[in-house]
Length: 111
Length: 112
Image (cartoon, rainbow over all chains, first blue to last red; front, side, top):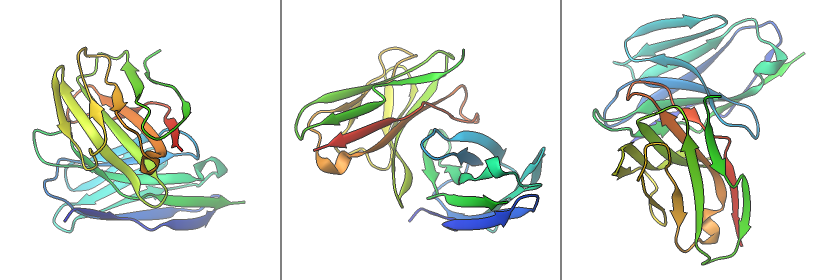
């Protein structure tokens, strides 16, 4: 079957670094996306990996290992506004617009 | 402003009363999709469209219909809504297959 696993909740302190892991088993793989979703709002794009390795974008980085079916999102210099849910999503078989989302990781940033 | 819009934003209805949730994007995006989001289940794809008149099922298509008669619009139709379709619905679109998805603001639907 198809499955994406992420931790349900994480807590970290302002200014710290947090790593949110995502493991996936999907039929077909054409890229892994990370989205941020504040409560009651729409998801917004953070990062995209299709090849193995690290992608860095300011305070956010994302890593992918296709052989391990594993990704992580790294958030540095945490700010209170980073309190949100972080969604891992995989685009499935080639030639389709099929997506599988994880259930999301709710991150609480404490002062 | 480039955006995806959904209407209505909130809807309370009764079992069996047909309804349509509209989705429109002004970015000339080729690809569009509908999701529902439920606590503990995350976002689940209902239907997607890769071009005008081309639609396909996602993971949870039962009880829903879609159409794509024009590039900008992708309405979601519930012919006979039931309480288990109470959910938060998101429409999304992408310019290209490898592009990120841009999400609409969401429609909170309650079926009594």
